[in-house]
Length: 426
Image 1 (tube, one colour):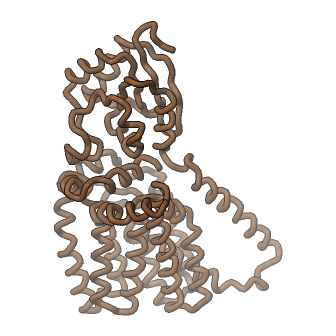
Image 2 (cartoon, one colour; image 1 turned 135 degrees about the vertical axis):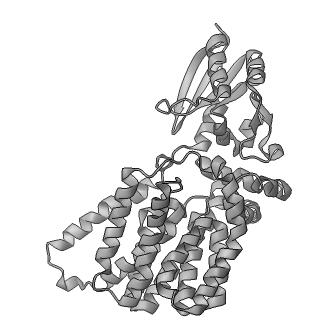
Image 3 (cartoon, helix red, strand yellow; image 1 turned 30 degrees about the vertical axis):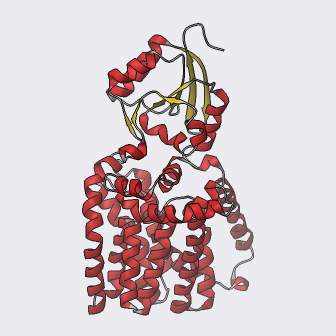
């Protein structure tokens, strides 16, 4: 588990009242997902599944359902060959594979949006409105799928009514999460050139695949592939909101277009020299797929951090998180965290109705720290800038003045540093 999954794990294990209290302060955008995880995770663990497996199993199932939904759309729009090809393409896309094995909401959102798109095509209007509303409550940026659906349904009065109903039903979540956006999304910057290049590549590929495809399929798939990420990128030029996983469902449109094009290919008509080239292109895809199943594919590795702490710690040791938000590394390992004295902690996460708890003022942190014999400091990698907040500066200054640095143990995405009083390093 990396730190975002650690959030899912520890929030899901909170009592329901504490979880609801948290959502009133932060992370309301993930509220429905947390409630589902709160209900399902204990069932998986009771069945003998490990924490990460139980946490990720809903994403695995959702991705399977999304691939089936893409195939069902392909079957109705272009026939069984397109259905098979589109479903397989969706399942093997690297971003889809990545979030299929992650304990967060994005795979579920994609599955529900694909289901809503299928209901749109079938013109099952009440079910369409309900399913798309659920998608938006799983993550409110699913509402951008309405823009894609407008290309198909805007001239139909029933669709306009459904769109209005979805907008009204999502409004309370939008209002609540807007008040929390500063705390949740403050880390986001404006889209980088790499974000725009990736979008241009996907949009260009989608437009190329749409040439010569069935008109009805293009009207459904091309807007879904292009409009949600394009709008989120554009809005992010003014108010940063863009992360590619927020619009993961857009890849369903690309898979439909690619599946339709692949279904038209006749192997015998392909020139002999193109066949080994096509096979060779599968090699980097396979390597990428294998890499996605390693801890290195994530920003950090919370269980590895906990293991390093367990190895270095002695009875009576204290722990210091630098910065404070890295407390998440140990919250999903309560056996390790509970054996240490958290020097800077004022109120625990559940008690403060926050994700990582609240910390003491700078003076309180300094006073506690100067009394500790040994401290395990959990740090970001060396290439990350220090936080400039006063509490974080006090932590660094006090360690430098009163302690010797005994050891730094690098872990993927983190460092665990052992500090002791002068002359007391092991």
